[in-house]
Length: 117
Image (cartoon, rainbow, N blue to C red; front, side, top):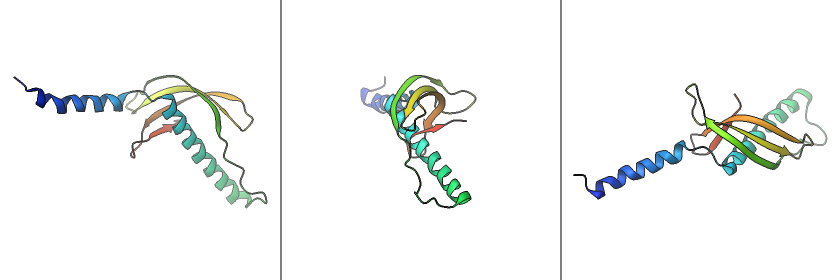
């Protein structure tokens, strides 16, 4: 018979694995989309500055997300990790609300990352 003490590590492992495999929350997705948007914008601004030279006014401010809503997620397929999720976002760049779909997965540092491929 297995003692109750021996079951504790297995129960803890099960909870840990369940937490890793669950779909991301809306708050986690918002953080990942914000980091992704900022990174892409900074890369584009650097490329533009390289091509046309630094502008007199400097680099425009990185757009921020003013509204965000998770619409749903499903497990990623084709051997990819994470979940493919659909979301709506509104940014302060005047383009209005957009609906998009992306893969969200755990990065090496444990944070939620986003990929649009």
